Length: 617
Image 1 (cartoon, rainbow, N blue to C red):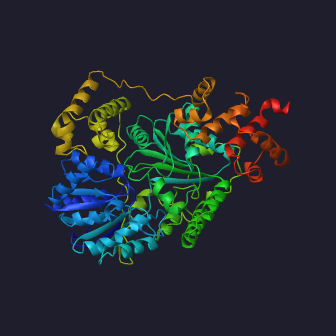
Image 2 (image 1 turned 180 degrees about the vertical axis):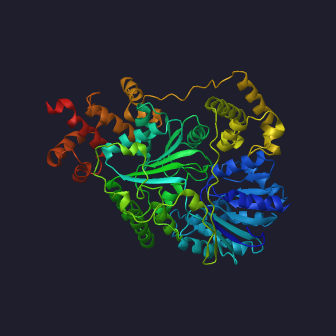
Image 3 (image 1 turned 30 degrees about the vertical axis):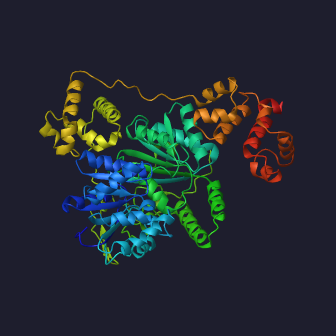
């Protein structure tokens, strides 16, 4: 912020340094506390751990702690012992929180993910609305709001809802020139083929795959594992410990492919993600920009592929139809039309995104999206799918500016907002020894396990890559590596130098790469042991419908025998009668014809039984 005596609203892209903005004031204003409001407990805990590693007193207060632990933190906070204190919006809204916070020497309230306060935002959360009372309860404290994805309307709403007083307004460019946006319409039967091609193209790189539903996440992980590609799942219905463990395995490079719902992403601080692949239409352009923005945070080239299907449009429309609030339904329809225009338009993707957020660009063609002629190797080969709708790149007017020209653009000031052209400072590629990188990654994982912290807290990927290039031989040389100040060098310096010495003497990584499981074989084995489908789902940590889909596919291929016991009462007879009327191509008319107690899972199994090879002989 320009000065620490002002309220502020900052719009910075993912990886743009939001955290530094509220961690810097605590370093300057001695004896004061910055209260950070954040929606995710895991994110707050990670940030606290990183600050503690740097010797900065920080604490998180949440409902998962015991009463004694919470009381202890409250007493220390009132005594001014913490430089940063992390709270959830729900916690801050409690009446008792307001009372004890009034005894804390607060310098600043930092509101993270501030777009959640606006009903016009794509992630509106009612509990954020209660933050509007901060100004009344703490009139002498300054408030700074931070977000990575807010349209002009949402930016104005943030200021109004938080009652910011003459705030400094900063907005960085929404243009990410190192990202290559490619949109492809495909069919369900070809989408998995394209996904396999993609992951084999990025072998050895960190990838995020976004799937639309929990079942699709689990089915995709099982499919990839069955194809020999290690992958892990992340979704909101997983046990919190399992979710945390999977995230850490991906963050520490044990498994390179993570398949998640939109529950995955907030606060993920991993720089070297080479691709983000969406398997369905996102609900909004903001959501897509935020999720695709997990790629390439190290400033190096990265790909953002959106593989959508016609049925995604119907699914989005169906969910919008379930919204009861008239105003919210209207806003959802607006976002629906915006995201459809994004995928169907013949206009530069980068330009569309910038325009969506109110940023005027000086180019007509970027050279870094499919509309402007950019192509991904794994999408180049023909695949059975609808004919490409996209026109030839030559039809687009205007030459594509090169990335150097784009990054040289001057900052523009408009509407009272200081626009910062925050172009990524790409790391030098350099000559990184792969064996050394894997050895240091193994050292980092082992050290993290011993200390019970996330691996990236010890050092980020960019610092690890720089270590491989520099190969420091002393603590003073190590301190010159980005990410290693006095505190980090004190904690890990000797261990890193010892690891480098062992590598020079011939030591190599001993942990083998994560082995894929055999989901189909595991399911068959459990079936042979007499377990019910419900028990198999529980043992495999899957939703029942995911297991049913896998078993139905095996029945249809003739790999397992259909078990009438899977179907309740006379449901099989009724389903078969409905199939005789409507065929077996679509489940919806069958379900609508039958009674409510007959489930989609039962229909799926009976249809597979009717489609099995011997059924047609």
